[in-house]
Amino acid sequence: MARFLKALGAPRSAWVYIAGGEPFGRNKALQPLVAEFPNVVTKQKLAQNGELTQYINMSSALAAIDYFVSLSSDVFVPSHGGNMGPAMQVKCVGLLKQLLP
Image 1: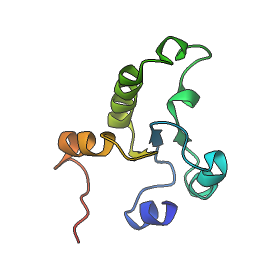
Image 2 (image 1 turned 60 degrees about the vertical axis):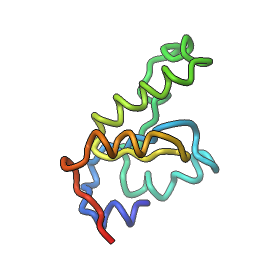
Image 3 (image 1 turned 90 degrees about the vertical axis):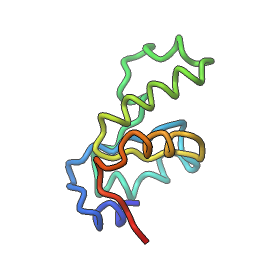
Image 4 (image 1 turned 180 degrees about the vertical axis):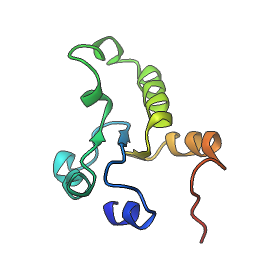
């Protein structure tokens, strides 16, 4: 992921938001990305202690938080398959650099 972002011209200072849950492999899986882009965050890192507690069993609310934070981030990375990628693609088409085969 880090090489990919560098190839697209993302600056080292870019805010990279990991949307969704913990990625497979947890922090170890993110080490190469964090080494190149130190501003890698999740909603758990951004929230204050206990702030997300009321949403623990509310997956739609957590997805909404991911959506709005992703819109504000320089880069977002969905941690798993699902609707976040297509939702962001619909919202941001034409605003961000697109990849073409």
